[in-house]
Image 1 (cartoon, protein in one colour):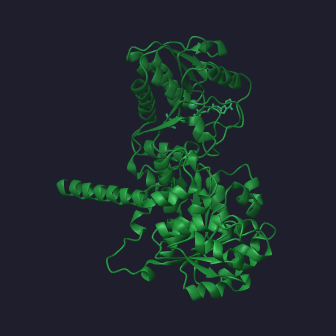
Image 2: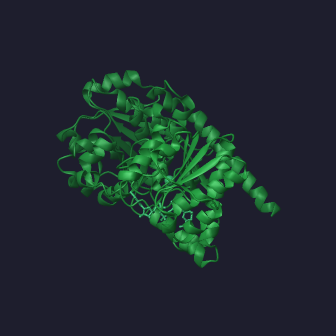
Image 3: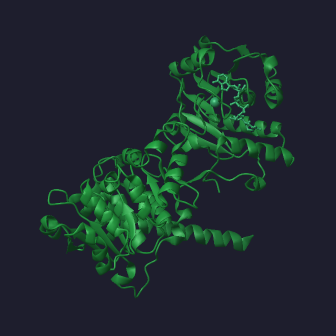
Length: 506
Ligand SMILES: NC(=O)C1=CN([C@@H]2O[C@H](COP(=O)(O)OP(=O)(O)OC[C@H]3O[C@@H](n4cnc5c(N)ncnc54)[C@H](O)[C@@H]3O)[C@@H](O)[C@H]2O)[C@@H](O)CC1
Ligand SMILES: [K+]
């Protein structure tokens, strides 16, 4: 599956695996360079092009790309950082394919370029670019013409997904075999621009050699675990969700979550309301039920009385002892817990108290600030990317952690982490996180496992936002969910039918 993400070391293992199975490095490089030239020709008409090659195999790809563009009639120049006599292995071979002597790279080389191919460093970057390399990258960036990065924009760490020194943002990045973390995680993903993934002929048996480090989110991962409404279902059979409200002046967040839970298909959704909020919630909710909730220490009893399958705690509940007590009590009930916002921040001073009561099916949904409060040591480590940080946090918490962002990461013990990029910047609006918590709760109430519920909810949440576009408000998200779920079901049915047809014909 092409949604797998491999770290750079394992990409290298795949290359060696190819060599051990009769596919030479030269052949991989020939296909890689040709794929870059092809992607360029599909997007631009011939124009003055400068290919900046570095001292390693990324530079080798650059030579092949330059030769392919020249062959297609493009005006191409190649500049090399370092001496040609220092090129080794496949890169030395690729320089031979170019035939001509490359120019010595200098910032002025880009002065007349209308397109720049960045083949300076790829997966082999081992330190932030300085001196000559940094000057070349800055000059590339300053020229103001499209930059096409081979594998990665030079200066971006493929695994850490960031640039600690100079980097030229690319309009297009062509990478090979499988994506690396930098193609999916911010801030690197935005520096890559459009990402094209090219097949360079690595044998399918690469899966015996390495494990992906993550996957891109998509319905194929969780669609089959979604509940299918059956004729004869009654509301109690479709799962019961409880959402806990804040006091009189903080009820909106819980109502948003409750509505989302209902839209996600939970048969019965109850807003547990402190006395001060009871009337407001009752007036503001129709299909959602309202229940009086007075004693944080007896939250478990309320959940048992409601026979709740899942509970959402946190949105606008208030930070402090009351919320802490409610969460600890709730964890004694059978319901799956979805904890967001104040239910997380309330444990800032003693996160281990929270982790001690969580169960594997529970879900935490921190944004980066809340993540820092619960996992300060993990968040402070600059040698981890967001996939590794979320995975480590999930191991420590003993449950699913959904780390929010434009590149939301969902991790849980025993699961390969998932990155959700099916989302829109329009989601940066008040209440959108409450809706996400409600969606997870609504799916969990119907028996979807915590990890699958989090992955599905993140994707559906993003799907609603993409459909609504700029100007969406949180209220809109849940209300468009039935339409988006309908479209998803039809798409998946079509894909399944097509799959059967192909299997039948072959
Ligand atoms: N068989 C393979 O291994 C394949 C590799 N491919 C390409 O090869 C690339 C990886 O090649 P390499 O491992 O040779 O690595 P790179 O070509 O990315 O860079 C390594 C070279 O750059 C130098 N370097 C690293 N960081 C530097 C810095 N900050 N300042 C100055 N010099 C620095 C290193 O000393 C080394 O000489 C991939 O990104 C991809 O483009 C593709 O051709 C596909 C097949
Ligand atoms: K590059």
